[in-house]
Length: 463
Image 1 (cartoon, rainbow, N blue to C red):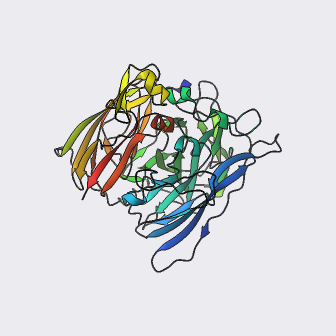
Image 2: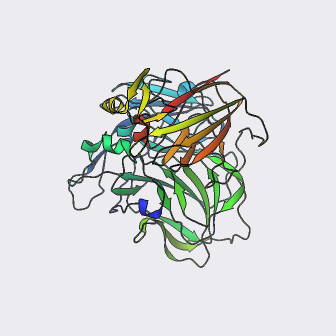
Image 3: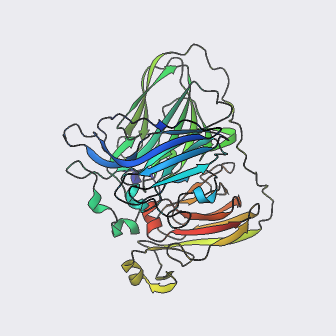
């Protein structure tokens, strides 16, 4: 499926809700301690309905860490199903990565699990369920995560926009009956019909004329690729997937984001700005207004210079002429309109008809779902190069746990670091990364239905 503006479906937008507050525990020594409850929640999105929308969520709407400061997060599962939390984009110890069945056993209903790590990278990240993810993510089990830089960015305001779509039925409730639809798993994944920002509908953020705003964009949808048009103000890309750019890129076109991608931006609000500035999603008809920047008042000082880059995170640069220690090809096949006729599943060669009976529709290198053996084994510090080939009829957002990588894909500036990469049908890309902390790290499509239906493998890093 080729990406164009007609792929972005019109979504409904109606009202707003209030957000819960984080319960922070007292600090012990140099470790900051937090307590998170995973629990059902309600949102009053639809004015015409007296019944709120039933979702799942956490006892916080934003988690803030400090770069280099150890944290301890006690997670209490008050949901009716087992679950985990994956700390998406953080380069942490493998045992804390939160992948059910790979790095930890799921947290049972009523159970607790304590995650302990030190965030070495500053930036915009998020935490989300990594157990029965296609359902739990669709129910809202995630929260954004900000790791503060040791030296604050030269901005006057920090605004977070978490973009999501939801499948709401005629009764104004989450459409749970369609969860697990095999048709959607074989196509583009679960697409919603209701749009929110920060689990609010068309929220407004107050800014001052003449101010410099840091805008953090995060796509938490199961499968929808979001296009975002910013207001017509000077804007720059500050960071991608949590990793700062050494040289800022001026924004001149629509920002396109696969599920799980993040962009940190700088917006300079003109001194003569007034009224509402809209953040919109383009469609083949009228653009959809997702959120507003409401200009009120004038900033006391005028910005006369372009923004400076953020301090670099402690990530090792890769010389372009360095010869990889490991090179391999990852061939993506399957899905509707694909040519895959068979694949290995659970160690057995199966026909497409047999695979569908097991709800498996996609494959990496002829293997559906996570194999027993890793895609590759590398030592910490070795250079890995993977050529990813999208031999399917659909776009995919490829995510590598515990690492950031460079990619040679034309839609991206080659200087960008990624933990998630949008690849269109028929595209190929070489990704290069330094093998990081020891452990078992997933590599999968973050169109979550595609992962559930076969698009997942893993790499093993040894010390």
